[in-house]
Length: 470
Image (cartoon, rainbow, N blue to C red; front, side, top):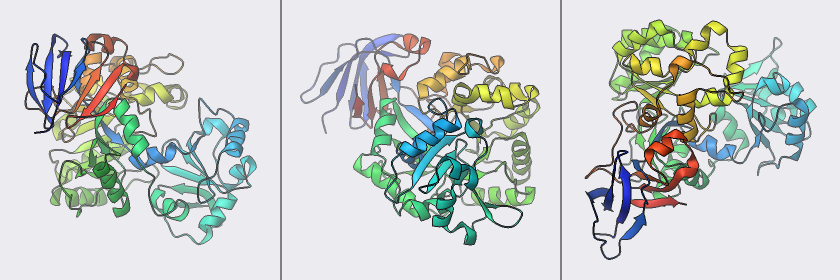
């Protein structure tokens, strides 16, 4: 038996201050004034809360790693075309000579295509990702390097004369294979950052993961570069998980209902049935009302399965909530977008739709399981900011979007504590026999919920091992 960890004077369940012993990856003892054993690490919690590690149920790991090495092309760092041109000019190129930008929104310099990007920076190949993650835009030098004129990917946008515009829809893998080399970026910095936020469980929501991407995630887990437990939505239906505590597992099968082109009902029904027939639930990307109506119709036809989930649910008409409850899928949503982009929503989304934006409270009250997540790097990765956004729903300008959709702080925290395989389910708890995937805070739970902040994280443990400490 290897030495473990003894927490002194940690707060449990917001009430009791006690000692907790961790050994062999599990919580093995809880009680007052436990005696330290030889070789055991002793952490003085000083009354700080010991919580189950947080779970981010929707992230994009390799996109996060790539974003860390990219120039940010949107607010607050960049707000005008002049600032964007300056940022691109100052950016260092990657190993293949490309300038890579992320986080772009049209409010900076309008819609981008080859011509618009040439006017901003035409000397080097440039690719800029829209903040939605669905669209890449390249300049003329980049279009030539990619040979877009002869490309056959369906996402390559063309004008009325058949010429590529420089806009590529949902072509991440295709673009990466032609501009980024063969290996995905390393995940060590991403793993460390997530651990510093108290995150111990992750669901990678990237669709259609390649074997190379899955192997890279598995390798990062085996080496400890990515210490979190990881579930994959984009694993192929015939993928055989390697097994073991340091290996990813297959989650529900990701299906994207792109707002740029919805499938017909029969095609979606067949995809849902194929996933269910392979023993997988589905995780369906829905950001529009039309996509949600289509999904509900497909689940009515194909039948729902335990574990089905709806990703984002950006617009949910109140009349559809009973239908969602009856079908049973969990909603994995991102109120952090309200904090990050809420002012844009108030400006661009019709006022009649504002109550439907990123609903949370009405879903919970309506009996729909709800989990909070980040959608990082496209949304704020900090779960404490997400919790605050779920509670207050304030934009950058301090306006409130959907006041009736606010959660209590405890409800928001619980929505970050559901198991990987049951988002929106009962929150995990620190109890004897439970896995020692834990986060220690520097203050009591009530104080942390009053002012949620990543600065309050003191230490993070996965399977009983300290993977980050302040």
